[in-house]
Length: 138
Image (cartoon, rainbow, N blue to C red; front, side, top):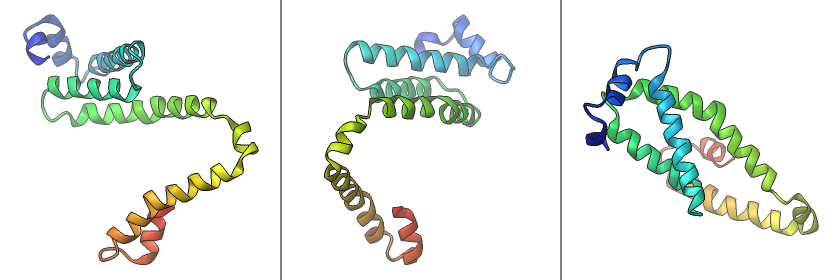
């Protein structure tokens, strides 16, 4: 991908406007992300795959260490994309089925504790105190 845009007007715009207030690099990145998410949706593939592809393309075309762009993407991600993800996930949650069968919720929490909690308690037993390991679990 880097070879495709190197030496083109797009590459020049990205390089020259990295530090400008127009935020061209960030805008192009968001357009790339949304475009790849739409493509994965059309093929019925998981949306995380589109985000993964966007990250691969972005990392392949990044110039320098990319830490400045990473900070901007963190701000956009945590400020917009992650809240939208949680809202859309919450909208898809069938609350009535949880009320009808509360044992499913209990089983879910027990499995979550087993999958996330027990490894944290066991793996870090030599490096962290018990209180710190319990905090990691919760």
